[in-house]
Image (cartoon, rainbow over all chains, first blue to last red; front, side, top):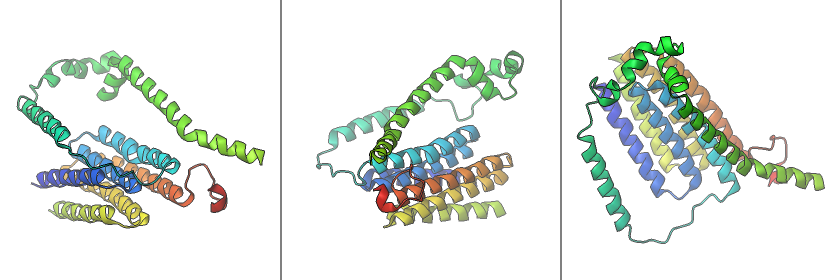
Length: 185
Length: 96
């Protein structure tokens, strides 16, 4: 019973936060709400027994993203320009149709946690049985990420590395300008 | 039963903190609300760990507390100084 209350309350909070993010025009408040949104998602992930995903969400979503967005905000204006009001009927229609299609798609999904779901019967049993022998990593998730999907992880790390360099160039560039200005003075 | 009541109380407190983050007129109201919300998330995970018997989640709750602390420090530094690269000893007028 308490699990249901917890799920419903957290999802309701997430919906309220998301709508508030859409409505607000104060960018600082929006970044703060993004932090709350991440914390709520992390809480939901913990309730869904995905502790490692929750940890990543809290570290990246609530921690680093907030700091990066605030550093960007320091370089720009604090208020978003008022967009001229227009009729959002076409976007609304597209969103509703897409949402309906997605909900229709969920009807065929196997029940949550079902052992006979396709995701559970493909290669997962092989990983669980032979993971330790083949990779020598005690944690199955780490074994899959670092060994079975090694190339995939390498690609992800490359993307994150490139993004990190780009962000450092954008946000750190200002510092060099300041230093050179001080040196000139 | 005790954990259920505690969980409900935490959820109500989360709702109040969320309301402050949405309404809060000043910057500091919102920062305090986010800090509060982070603390409540830590408590939520801790209580949920005992509620569901998975006490290993406590480690994650502790790490959340650390991230929350560092995040709030970073936000306050930015609000105070307007950037991240001055060390805080400079005059405010000098950095602007």
